[in-house]
Length: 126
Image (cartoon, rainbow, N blue to C red; front, side, top):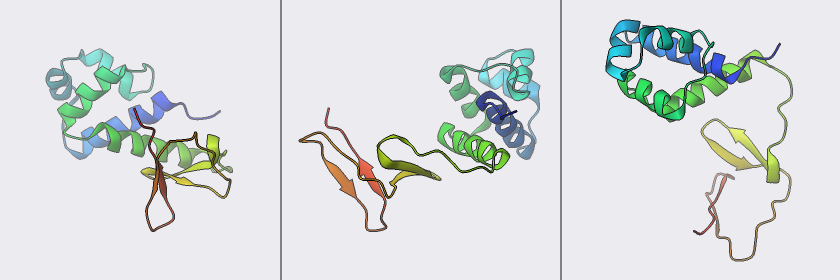
């Protein structure tokens, strides 16, 4: 059975909390979430809202982006099969999306910027 995102997020939260030597009680108090609910989130039984996850991350002094990258790594490590391609020819590369070997079509007038390392960032004008 595949690892669920809520389980990976819970694993990441617990790893960060224990590495910082914080108790569930302390983090729940600082994040203003019940102790029982935080415990359920860490065990992967509850899927927190983005607001709640942001509050927990703030209480742990970790960025939400770093937590999600760690959770994604946990999922990737649990499923060592070939990763599916992202839409539009992008693939995940740690903290950014990079162009895969598939051509990418953009709408006329959509600015596309690229760095010299072969990665590209696609920005759609608002």
